[in-house]
Image 1 (cartoon, helix red, strand yellow):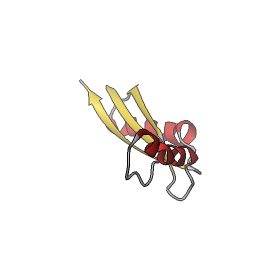
Image 2 (cartoon, rainbow, N blue to C red; image 1 turned 135 degrees about the horizontal axis):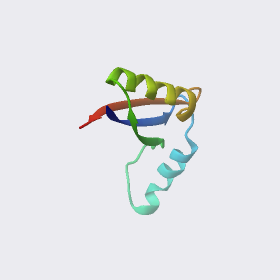
Image 3 (cartoon, rainbow, N blue to C red; image 1 turned 90 degrees about the vertical axis):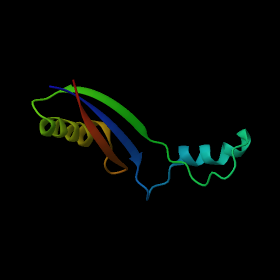
Length: 84
């Protein structure tokens, strides 16, 4: 069966996000007021073949832990949807 995984990877809350801080500090330059914090991460859409949703989850977990996310500095969450 064909599945789509929507994966969000974000810096851990305990860690400084210099890119997000730069964006937050420059919001006033584009006349956007009231922004207190910005965190910048990654969104990944992955289509995969698996025998079951459980098997798809196992594949996504492996991909996140071993390749997509640096689990020392980043957290991840995902949803999986069956296609057709």
